[in-house]
Image (cartoon, rainbow, N blue to C red; front, side, top):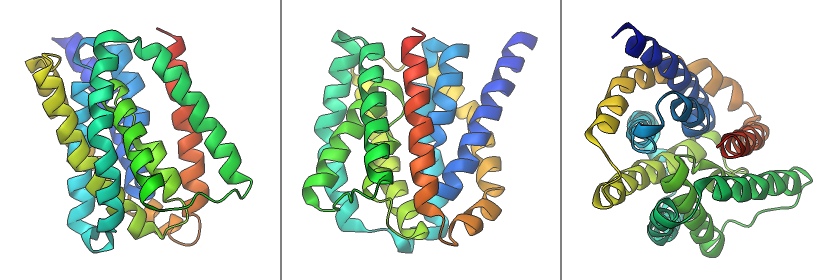
Length: 241
């Protein structure tokens, strides 16, 4: 029991840190928490991280729901549905390590291009495509934020956070349903995710100063930085398998 408590605390620290990042930038919980939870308890992944991925957006929306760009969220969710189905196929038939390497390289390339002022147009096509990629990687690995965040990197802080929260909440619920239908959502994954929710609440509660700092014109740089770290984490996690 002491060993299990220690693992919970270590995973909880990762979830707390991810919640602080997501509270400020709009995404990042999965990228911080997923690799740690995978190392500590691979049998509860990706279900456990999807539970916390669904919880955190509800807290954001309770505060900033007015900033949601509903049209953009709708297009992203339109792409997320087939993307989640593809992610489910990846879990069953394809190595998620291979997928992780490919996606990590793609995200890093996108970060480099957009950091060099290559604009990412925000329209129905790009949002649907980003939603599809997010659906594949989010369902298969628990990390689905970077594709959507890169499209929204030039938006205002409240708009990024609220729109991504709407997308993440519904998409995490969708992934949980698909994992359940595939028989890849054991009860212990739900229990582990529920046990980590208090750390989500704490991280959200202390993210206010970071949010105010980033809203002073630093959101785009933060989005690119977190996306780059996310890609590196996914690469590291995938290569370590």
